Image (tube, rainbow, N blue to C red):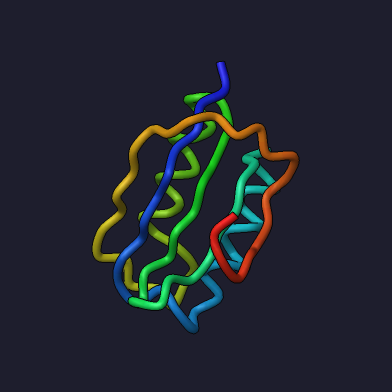
Amino acid sequence: MIKHINITVKGKVHGVFYRKSTKAVADQLGVRGFVLNEPNGDVYMEAEADNSTLEMFLEWCNEGPQDAEVTAVESHEGELKNYRNFEVVKRRL
């Protein structure tokens, strides 16, 4: 069953290719949704996939790319939006 989760990643996550790396991992896992930088320094994303895939994706979000320093990852389930792919966007869809 496909689920939708909203994710906020806190820490040193701007200027470290977090969004680009997230897209690569999402594409590899088959996660659909989007990722963007928030003005407050967080990274926000919405992700849709089956439960086990989302668990793997969240594990990666807690690590991030090499130069990231993730201090917290907050996630909660949301309404399914049936995204077609995973995109890096400039503002919330």
